[in-house]
Image (cartoon, rainbow, N blue to C red):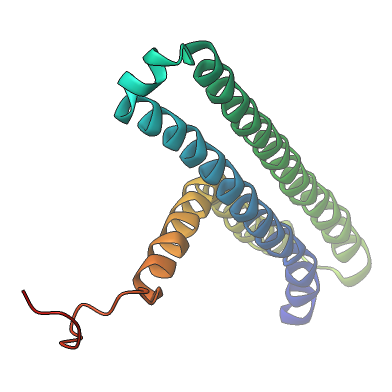
Length: 175
């Protein structure tokens, strides 16, 4: 029975590949969305920081339009992320149910041709279903992992950045 179980489990490994592909796509989409929201936040920060200048030149409408444009970019990125998440989850569910159908079909052939009993087939089928359901429950969390990965990447890039001014340099004019 172990050779037959390995055959079914190899087919079940495709859902892991689909989940990995979904995680990579979600990571990219999450990074784009976070960058767009950061740009929109920068527009607000600059506008509020220089509110007297903005008001004196009557650039309020211009600042609002610029902020709206940045939010539209962020919205498009979020919609794409939602589409990728939906398609990825649908692909994983499709693979899971196809695997269940294959397992039931193959199990019936083993019962008919090789005199397996239903208990052995149900044992293997339940093990595969439990594995598939565990992967299915982990899939929605991929979005949170992708967002965290994108945020960590930006943080590590900031940490690795070399400043143009060396704070420990003692040369220069001393007052």
